[in-house]
Image (cartoon, rainbow, N blue to C red; front, side):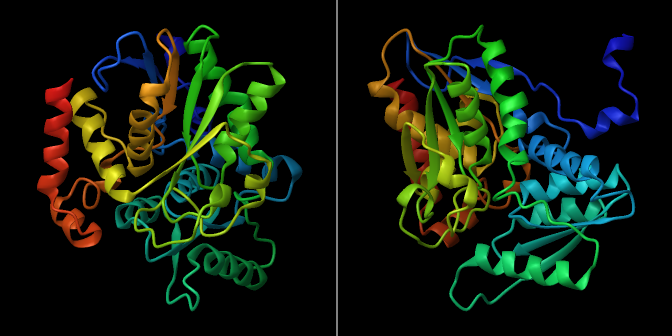
Length: 335
């Protein structure tokens, strides 16, 4: 019993989230599918790992101390994770967001005591660039404050090199043929890539991106769902070289999320829905006997009013919710 109880310092760190085998997601006999449930992290997403690593780096260097201030551009999950990490360390946090930010995520940040700074009316439509400009302005206005620079800091991929990838490999007894990872800053997939290469593994890394994202040579376009893709190429992305890249339309993210929830009972966010869509596309090419895994990057709770809301799907994506349900019925009847 005592080994399962952590003192207060335990609330600072991400933990080894469960990896589970899924049997109902696809009709794929002979292929083992595993899900790494990072939606169970204390802040509800994989970004708990990133936030802990970024804040630790500043505190260990002496650049950040209790009473200090962190300012970061975030579309939601990192903001929640940084809010939680900062509050338990006695640090102020300012989240710079745009109008695409998930409103539920902003409420969670505020519940942790964060200040939310909303950037609106970007003249060129580049939301990420506008947020980063606002971060620079706030840093100048608040001497001694720091930004974690999730887009370029080596401590972002380091979190996934030291925890995410080794945890997955341990869970699957060291044998994994393919790993699907959603991309935005590309810190997660880069950390996993570095681990795979340093340890001489044969695991193929599949990057899942949003349609409208410029990552990996993509064409810029409008995106409504946060947390997947980017409007500019982050510094870390220049080092990431996945084996395959899939670009997923938002309606297919919705379908993927709803399929995962109704077949496996996992309520996940939009980026995981994109992964489910990508896996479905690649599945016919995957050899029998393969082991594949994916990250459940975040919880679906903040997406109840978007991804899981029929009216939102109809109004924002121009799709009838019945078409989403019809597709699921067709898939179920075929499985």
